[in-house]
Length: 269
Ligand SMILES: CC(C)(COP(=O)(O)OP(=O)(O)OC[C@H]1O[C@@H](n2cnc3c(N)ncnc32)[C@H](O)[C@@H]1OP(=O)(O)O)[C@@H](O)C(=O)NCCC(=O)NCCS
Image 1 (tube, rainbow, N blue to C red):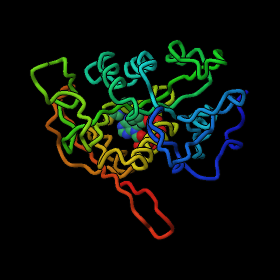
Image 2: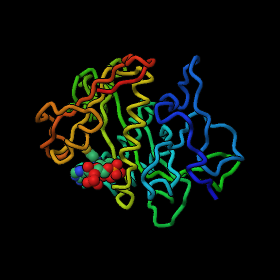
Image 3: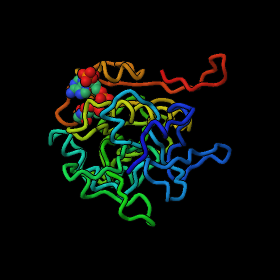
């Protein structure tokens, strides 16, 4: 049985998350080497973070942890996306393949090692460690992104280069300093338990620590604006994006490093 989350709480809070990406460790940064609860017989996994925030019992009982997504998670992402979004707002499997293939390091999943048969992503879950194939990482929520040279998310950023090979503006722009978040979703039966907030906070903390971008941007429906504002996103008004029928608002969060007196802390505005 997984250990209780409280025995897993690190002294540092979520601000000590390991860097983005499974393979892009900073040489001068000590990676978090905690495994998810129940994985004591596994070797240290440098890309995985236990959730250290507490306060939501239903969420904590899942012993969730975050880790970057890879192409092996595509099927789970597709199931999750189909469960969370109406058909016209879903990213396709092709898009997940493209985005995780290009920018795995800009993604983050929130997982549980519980394997309830009622969890739709259990069927496509991956072993957490090849030495313990019975232990599965079951995806509960995901954030998937690419980079753009725009300051907001446009339809071009959301498109695939293969949609129009003659248009160089489509898809990921590695040199961009804006992270375009395309999907934030939690499986419906696990929504409103704090998982989405935990995932988004962990993601934004990682972005700031890695200095991979100057800002994070996304498009949101009006009812979600207050949610994103809680994380420091600013409403930049109605979006020109017509994806999924339009009606979106541009939400942008500048990501900066600030010294607030008691050492460097990462500030997300
Ligand atoms: C948005 C989402 C990722 C949030 O994850 P979550 O785990 O449910 O969120 P949390 O439990 O951390 O926070 C819950 C808060 O999210 C906000 N929220 C969630 N869904 C909302 C909705 N449909 N409309 C408005 N606010 C919503 C509310 O502020 C809510 O607080 P409340 O329960 O006190 O009302 C999740 O609800 C989801 O996957 N929704 C469907 C997909 C989606 O709309 N994604 C966002 C695209 S912009």
